Amino acid sequence: MCLLLRQIVQQPGGGAHPFSLLFVSPAPAARDGGFYEKLAGFFIHLVPSFILVIGLAIAWKRPFAGGCVLILLSLLFTLQFNTYRLVSYFLIISVPLFVAGVLFIVFHVLAKKEST
Image (cartoon, rainbow, N blue to C red):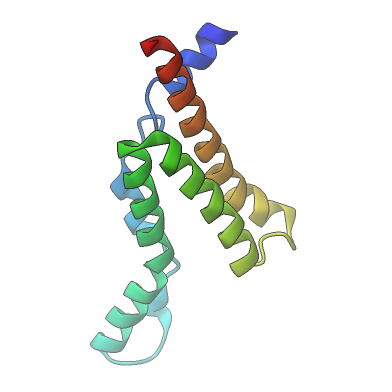
């Protein structure tokens, strides 16, 4: 079991490209308005994705600190977006951030243990 866990956390992020988060956004283009209003709406809807990319970049450089940041982001997103109201929203938005944060912390602990 420990070998399987080690193989999972050897690659932080699980191989997903961090910039794939940049394009996860609701479609604000369906609103009425000019081009610049739609473009501004698009970037406003991407702010949470930009925050996640920053947290992921921190986690890649410093796994322990980044894991803590991702866990805090999961709590922040839970409170800000009220994902605690629906189980499906909570499982889709908050739980993956929490699990990723825990995996980065586990990776840090295992890497530290192997280096000593």
